[in-house]
Length: 508
Image (cartoon, rainbow, N blue to C red; front, side, top):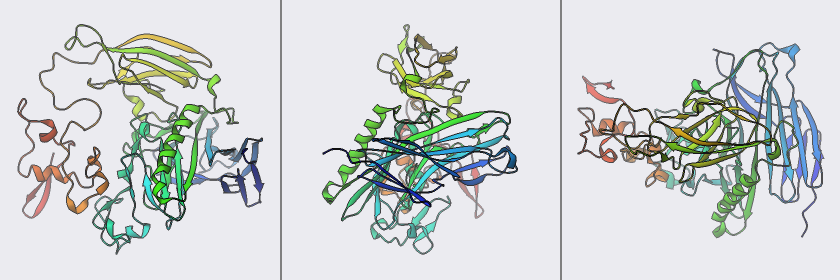
């Protein structure tokens, strides 16, 4: 059977995209995302990003691309967001989904401002979508929005955390709901979504083919799904393209007055699948993962119309081999196995973690320390990295210039971790996780069952109280050669509560 024909209908107040597999209705001329921003040193402002002009960019047999655009009017500067926005939607034949991306542009004539967060949010029908999936291990039935309200839910110390005391689904009674428990690293968050209940099980997924346009690099955590139901691109799904969660002001994007700045966020794929057989519902997740792999392979896409989105032929590549020189471990250089190596506009060691203005490109090395980074947007970058088992950040001594169609072999690169002498003792293993330290069991009053037997048990609510519980009188003491970090060294450096004359004081 041949592919069904694409259709575009402009109904005035809304636009309909239809490829025979999926029909999408978008408000015209809005098609909005949202943004949190501020004037330098000012208060945070929340704003919807709405287009004021609708255009058909491309209409062919296999692809339709439409635009909701709003240029910044220099004559009305005042207190308005100094940003031009072009939000694009793409539908293709044969794919049950649609692509979305946006072009943000700050003209040089505009005022300075700080960009904190921008995202795309999908709020699904709460009577249908109850089951979320963000990884093979992290899938569950979620609470209803009503469960977070007084009478059904009890707000805890952390504002986003709610204890379910009388949820609509009694199986969830006694659990804690907190959107931050479902965060994912950029490098791990390639697909997340929801599956609706029968009679027709529908999967609604957000697929990231790349995280080059997301801020903070591979280990930056971002929100995914939360009760609503929501998707962030949040039964709620959100698509966090750019955010300050877990870091704060240090990762704000500072756009200066007189600075011409432009960035393309996306495209991402909003993917849908379905089955009428409830026993096959889990296969919707498997299919979504397979679609993610296809999208990653196809990146960068060859069907995007904007000249600001660069295709493969307009990008470059680099390769090299990273070795570690540590004479206290080996007289010969050591291959940097499973190291992360990446390009970022940051020019200082480790500064890629707060770099937000430009793009980042990361890969992992193989067992020999070899790496190749492909499809790099032309520019001048710092080459960064870190190696499991070694403390510190690597930064190549020279900047790396990438041009369209270029391939640069950097040869052998050597990282020499700073140290004053041989290792006498250490607690844990330097791999940028807390896996080698003690994570207490959650207080049964505040459990999330999803993390009871999970390597991510650190996401449970209230674990900070575990330190005071295990050390009621004195802070932890670690005896080298006797104590085990997995059992005897608390994973987080938190305060200890001490009862003193019927009041609580803190010790550090």
